[in-house]
Length: 309
Image 1 (cartoon, helix red, strand yellow):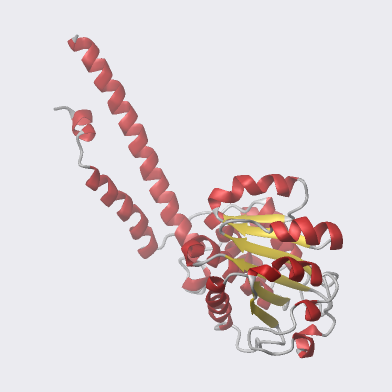
Image 2 (spheres, rainbow, N blue to C red):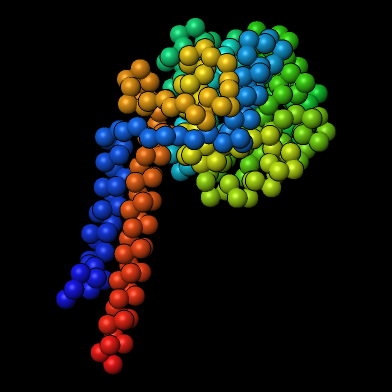
């Protein structure tokens, strides 16, 4: 039995084991790899950066997913929240599925460990869970008055009475909606809120949904996209490169400069997307090698059968 025949007869459990190791080892033994940023991700970062320090600007993050899509979406939510807190940008969070409510708290608390001065109601308002039946009324109502559309936050406080609402009334001030979603990508916002009120809409989505979302980016209905773990890794890098170092954003520097993720100065919780991309890259390379070897083996096996005949 030659080499390729041995590979053809290889127990598939060895293949599964090698793929598992290709994923696990890079997660444990972190190494540096380059992260290249793309324009759809840069557009979201740049817009949030433009709101830095302004009392009359805010963003809204809509958590439209459950724990099943956390590996891809949670790192981008943490990165966006960290960016906003570093740049002193006001943040609203909301969700329309009950399973997303604990994820909102988890994301905020994860980032707040680095910011002792950040206060609920002052720097951010967690609107919390609202029933899905109220999705469209809230989307449209926020265009007129946010405090009337969502009267109370997750802690039961009157939104209108919270200090963060000073200077914030509707989409004229809260002018960026980012929906992180495992099944849709901001449809309610770009179908109803953007054409009627002109609010900017962006999407953070799983990688398999990226192809569906790009046409909406090309038409301008979405101002940016975070596509899967790759998009989250890009955003993480820009936060470390610019916001964490209090530097102005630059597309050239974002694409050319490298940020080490093996340096302990960057906390593990703020580099999970880039570490995850290492594992994803190694696993993809291994799978490609398996496919190539399998096809080469099949070719030689057919050649051998022809010679025998």
